[in-house]
Image (cartoon, rainbow, N blue to C red):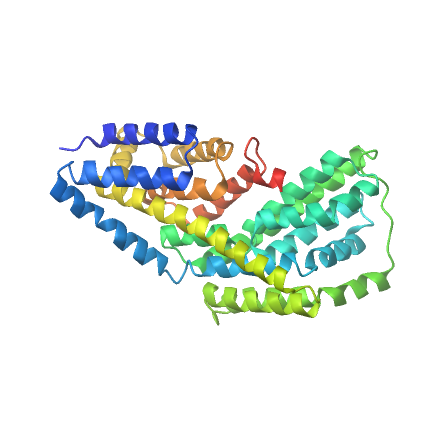
Length: 394
């Protein structure tokens, strides 16, 4: 009889030990998954162990051919093209003209531009890197406090993974078998609310500490209206990608293909699509997709072992025995995510935890679409939490 509790403890200790030794998350999960297949499900016997290891091929093949996950390289490619299209500078200029009259207005404009950029690319790091290059020098030149500017750009960059399209939501949906379209719809309003709260905080900070945020300068309405003309390509791209998904005309994968093609056309029209840029965009998409898929497949191997051992059921039984309410467990999980977010990157955090947490949350009666939005918000916090804080380094 397999002692699920003991194996779970050994597995968790092994996970943190290997991560502490500096082994990459994908290799750690894959290694523990293979060990689990051979020694626990296969009971260490050569014949049964090898038979259980045969599941690895099926997991690799099934998920490598996943139509849902095909959207990841396409959205990454779209973001890579847009990085070179000059769209970031156009959005920043429009944001400055429309919101520059507010206290701390240029930063509010940067937050708004980040939200729009996120609604196109779905990449938080790309958004932070783009506006770190485009907006930061200009805002500092105007006399804004450097730390305030850095914090605003890093925080606003996180909106990209909540406002659809979002690569993080695609990974969540693929691993929990949830509708990507429904996840995108669910993330839109919370993303806009967060962006609004960021802006309100910035305005309050500018009023409380005027030395950190210089007096804003108004812009004529004519200049604002002309700025809208420059935003037409961005608006068309958003409608092409999200409109098709929300209206049910295209799947997220098909919308990603349309978005990548339109982004390439935009870069061509702006005369930014040179051969080196095309090569760089394709290589970036290939590298990022390979990294994500390696982590996802390794996590699915570990998840296969966890499910077959009955770990989620054992945890559910333990929760019932301890008389813990679903909301108590929910807040405990939020705390765990916040701690993990300080130690590992966002994609790794999601794929490491979902094989175990997904069935547990579903068993407690929570809606998985709603929980997906919660997870993405927690991931947003991890992107700006030291020592990892990827957006702080972008």
